Length: 108
Image 1 (cartoon, helix red, strand yellow):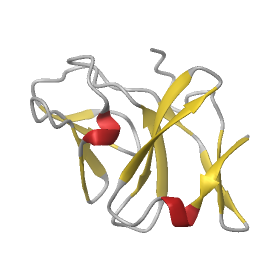
Image 2 (cartoon, one colour; image 1 turned 60 degrees about the vertical axis):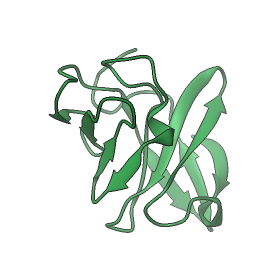
Image 3 (tube, helix red, strand yellow; image 1 turned 135 degrees about the vertical axis):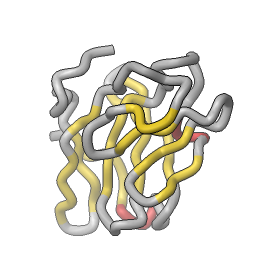
Image 4 (spheres, helix red, strand yellow; image 1 turned 90 degrees about the vertical axis):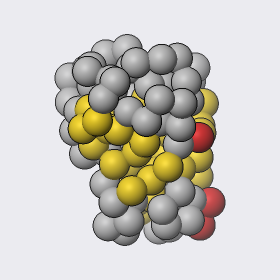
């Protein structure tokens, strides 16, 4: 697990971008109070998902409105049809740690 940032760096309902050993991640504080990490690129268009909008446990791409489930990476709204990689997250002592091995088996 790699330390990314403090939980205070990601207010509830927002996402930030993090470069972790060359892998761009979107670190998301879901409205369910959990933290998530997904690959920071929409599977439909090469656009940063971290710039999108958090809605519950989904992240919406700002360009075409594709939506992704933060727990599974599966698209829940068109035009995206391919899932994005999802990475395991642990919160320890107020810090966010992420593993770069996708938990949903999706590679970029």
